[in-house]
Image 1 (cartoon, rainbow, N blue to C red):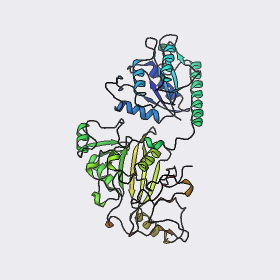
Image 2 (image 1 turned 180 degrees about the horizontal axis):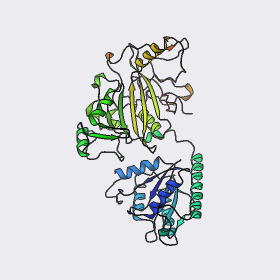
Image 3 (image 1 turned 120 degrees about the vertical axis):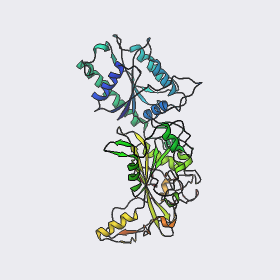
Image 4 (image 1 turned 135 degrees about the vertical axis):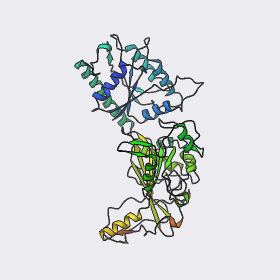
Length: 464
């Protein structure tokens, strides 16, 4: 279970932060708890809308991606703190990540009442219209005399207090699980909320340069004083210069593209001009939102949103699409959309890997002594759209390909790939067959129904 912890204090020395850190470390068997900071959240003001600021958007995305929220509040003048109240104002002004989100309220104070009045105040705020959080009822944890509650290692001293706290957290995780079960599966159209214009912000968004600026790389690098050339970069398993990193990425026999968790196209391994690429990219496109890099000329935005949402929400970590790039000579590539996650498992974007798989197949056949032969039971249509079961077809037609690549059309000139045999053939010792993902990049909107994206990495299988 994934929970986020919010501490209603930005003080350098905060007992409530100590309490939150103790909970995250001591009870990690119950849930993975990520502690969020309110330090950079601006004071709420309708006259200075900061909804799209990095700090507010960061909280929004973290809360939306969590199963529940733990809020730990001090007590200031019989109420919760100004910083926590202001933060909730931002999270209920134009965005509403706390809506229907399970919340557990805890708190500590210097005196015997243990922030009881602040917790009551916070409960009323969270249950107000516009916030609509689901605050866990009937449970209170009031840590009084907090200055004497922790030992030198910042652990709670009293064993009974630790047990009571553990009981409350156990009840909360069970309550979250029950609410999740009652809520049922995610709404079928939840993917429509994906913002391809990258209007939000993440903690890695570079501000101060327009996303559509053709010199985005140069200007963003200047703003952030980015390393370059012979400058060294410390990685988790090595130390390389920027030049070495570029050489390494360009040597990989595939086209790599990085789209961040704000749906902004921020990198590709520029090894070939766009005319020689399967999924065309140009240096002046780097920095663009997906809506600009992938114009909706074939009404494919819905498919892009479906793929991104499937990866963002963890329904799958890899989405694959086999795509014809030269029908005359039957040349195919595989588009792999790989979810990128950080050390804590948080979604941080997509690595699109476009690979000409024929050289791999050819080498495999040479090494094993096998060959490709016609499959009499083959039903793959190499000249049309991805297959969709008759019962699964939606009423409104839409394009067959979830073209989630961040560049333009995948079609390339004939010399972009070695001649490949038709995918209607199988090895003489065939492997387990995979789902049909043979979507065409050139299918018109009325040719085929829009596929449902599921977790089996197939473009055309219903998610029933």
